[in-house]
Amino acid sequence: MTALLRYQTDLFLRSQRWLAPLLLYAVFLGVGVRAGEPVLGALGYAAAALLPVTAWVVRICLNQEPAAARHVVAATAGRQRAHLAASLAAVGCMVLLGTVAVLGVTAVSDLRGVDPFAAGTAGLLAAGVCVLTGAALGALCTRPVLHAPGWSLAALVLGSLLALVTSGSPAKHAVTGLVTGSLTATVHVPWLAFLGALVIAGAAVALACKATAWRE
Image (cartoon, rainbow, N blue to C red; front, side, top):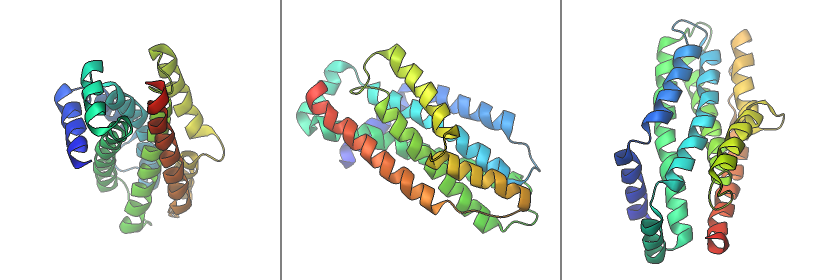
């Protein structure tokens, strides 16, 4: 699995397909985050923006190999392991990006009345929730579940929106907790939302990996 992860990550980075999602996330932060604003609200915005970007990156990683190369890797390591490695490579890259974003946002935001360690912990967990939710969405909005590029993209955009506004969504819970907490300088650490997102992402990726056995 280590070799597969290294292969998928290297393929993603060398392809430069990461550039568009990274620029989109930078635009989100540039528009929505200002230096000196309350840290919790800024962290909530930074975390929310990770969800659609993660879904996009997962979709890229699952489709980045040419069909011939994908079949060779599947024959060597197994379809499910290859699919899982691509998903984990995308999540790993987004966890790194989310961590850097949380640290940067915390450093430039207003910390008055808020413990920086507690704020950073809440921000990292909220970012993790959004990354995991985005990973689940990306896994279900591309092959082998959805093969048509048009429907895949439409489902990804709509699903990202619903995940951020639907009651019961771990991402909505985590982001709302940060944003509302900024009004009273109260830190809500989204442990429950993180566990929920972890279960959802695990189930979605497992389903997608299983589907490779009978849809590809």
